[in-house]
Amino acid sequence: MGCKDSEIVNYLLTWPAIPHQESTLSDTRIIGTFISDKDATMEYLRSSGKFTEEKLNILSGLLGKLIMECDMVNCVSTMDAYISVEPLRILERTDEYIIVASQMLGEMVTSKLVFTEDGYWHLGNEAPGCHFREKFVRIGHPAEQSAQKQPTE
Image (cartoon, rainbow, N blue to C red; front, top):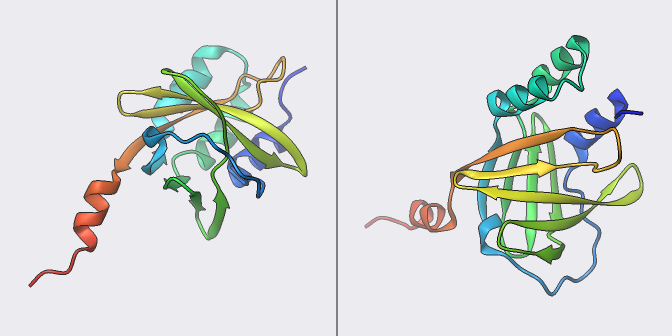
């Protein structure tokens, strides 16, 4: 049993709709602005052999649009005209990854963000048969963003 098309589309449109609960964990690696890397994600999806050409064509039209901007408290996700601001909830943290809690289709799910040199891989639904993952690359860091907001004299 694999991911349904509707699950993949809903993942792309709703992640990370994170429930309003306190988290005592934090991680500075997630702070900044990241964008979906369509090319790297499509390369992975094709090489996995788990997606039909039809599904790959649908995904190709959706990937590369989602922008995630996170600070220590919230994540703002933007895709086309859709914008969501949700609290950041980290459940687990290691040297390689973090686990975040999110809401999908009214149910609590967890996702793993595996960090890379230039961003992270978002491993969505880890259910058996679901092999979807999406690459995000950093396009902005908080220090750079703060410097851009400083008034010039």
